[in-house]
Image (cartoon, rainbow, N blue to C red; front, side, top):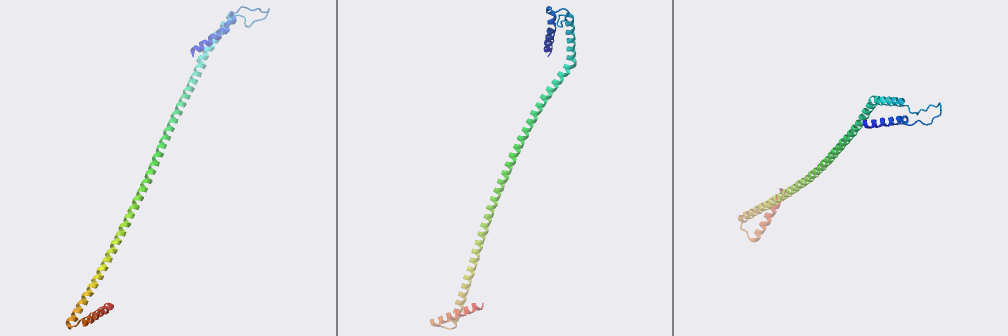
Length: 198
């Protein structure tokens, strides 16, 4: 920055001093040449320009430079803040995506568990139904066996009663085979009559 100011000052001085060093041109009589070499005038101009340049350097350029530097720093800070905000948004977005995936996995796991529970319940219900059907078959078999045994016992009881009845009648009288047949038929008729009364 300082070298640029020195170069500018040298250029201005050269522009102002060149006419003073130039030889006097042909000028008409009585005419004033503004560009005529006048060393005092040129020196005063350079001194005034240097003083103005120094005043501007300290009074205006310093604050202008500070303002420009502050603006540049603010722009860099704004860029850094924007990058930081962008990174934070990307991090939050990634976190939300991760939470979304996690929630989807949890939902999938819950659905899978519900399917497994439903299948287990279905299997358990089927097993309970099979056990109940088996128990019903076993009960029916027992009932049938009990009824059969009762019927057999009843038939045996009747057969014994019939035999006792025949034997009793046979003992009471000595009977021939024809008479025994008549006794058996009579006993059967009595048993039928007794069964119909019951």
